[in-house]
Picture 1 (tube, protein in one colour):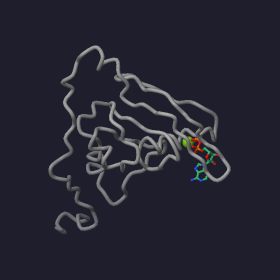
Picture 2: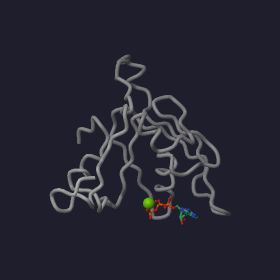
Picture 3: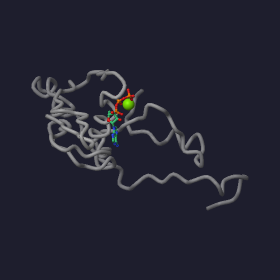
Amino acid sequence: MSTEGGHADTALRLTLPEPLPKFRAPDDRSPEHEMSAIIAVDRITKRYGGLTVLDACAFEVPRGSITGLIGPNGAGKTTLFNIIAGVTAPDHGRILLDGQEVTGQKPHELFGLGLARTFQIPKEWARMTVLENLMVVPRQQTG
Ligand SMILES: Nc1ncnc2c1ncn2[C@@H]1O[C@H](COP(=O)(O)OP(=O)(O)OP(=O)(O)O)[C@@H](O)[C@H]1O
Ligand SMILES: [Mg+2]
């Protein structure tokens, strides 16, 4: 790694995997496809010891929608996000992404299918430059 330019030796160089994940082209514009759920949570149950955090939780996120999830502290929102994002395994139930079951897939595999997760409290990579931090976003992200 080059040491030119002062602190370059401490900066991580961002290398993107080759080939980049292929995102499915939105080629199906049929009414059935447009109406179908982009994410389906199918009877997800998650227990921590004797505490049932999610009990056969089920809902669908409509394609193209901006959907919120609200609930009191400790309701299980983060647990559910972690399960959808592949960070936490459910005890029962399935997650479907664009009609395809993705339960148990790892976050980087889900990223390859177009699912990216952001966090409640932003945390930058301190050893990377501002530009490199900004580059760590999904491709085709418009907002
Ligand atoms: N890894 C874990 N081990 C044991 N219990 C956990 C674990 N993660 C979460 N819990 C418990 O599961 C419940 C749901 O927690 P969770 O963080 O999902 O709630 P939340 O809706 O995101 O709450 P908040 O609004 O405070 O962010 C809480 O009672 C929490 O203590
Ligand atoms: Mg939370």
